[in-house]
Image (cartoon, rainbow, N blue to C red; front, side, top):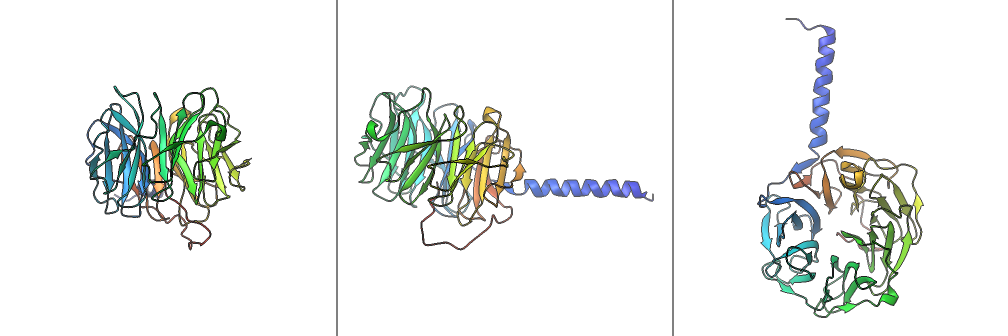
Length: 360
């Protein structure tokens, strides 16, 4: 039967639409993992390099199991944090292939938070007991600048944010004085496992639209305001001065060029909101993972021009993302759980000597 021009046109449009859909979905490739059936998804990452990446699965029940790849995502293995029974993960930081710290918060019968440390790539774990020793502490994340200097941040406890720093690898954690931390708002908490680091400076957003900053590895803190006092804010920095802050509700974007002291609203809003990450090795590339919480939209999107324009990748709910290079990245979701980036290179540029971009 001979096709009419109209039918040919319709078939061509259908083929182009299907090809475009495949191209869109192909940018994130599902990863095969051995995650238990009761796991609802993956919500945080820590990458050592393009081969070694850790991820935190989450469950409605307490879960002391991590997943880890050492071959760039070809295979993922479960790692159990012995001693963490009855707790759930808040955050993880893998300094290198051997030294890993995890932040665990109360779940089930437990009422206290804890930091666990492994010096052998996750084979064995010990609790570093001098941090979050107050009753009802609620940790949000832990980070190490090197093998000695680290910081751990938690919810307000006793009228101030509960923050600790260490200078000996975590053998002794020192509580940061409340005089060195701005007072919390009525219901203000850090955004769990979402922070940014450049050299000795660390930033994190809160649930009341503020951005906290420490330039001395967590010993003293200051804060700045965004336009969103009643919502969460996620931050990402490309260097010590330039960064973006993303609203957790209605998509909105602000930019800083002075290290987070002040923020200016950007004209173009991204298509979704959620958690924002800078792409290491690029100049102006960022990625957003949107879970749909607070009505902010689901999916993932990226920008190559510092937030001026955005490309929507998919509409699958995602909880967190990490990029190691402009070519290699991972994202977590509550459906397939883990994906690896197989899309276009997100603007690779030569490295510079003015600072080391740290991967969360």
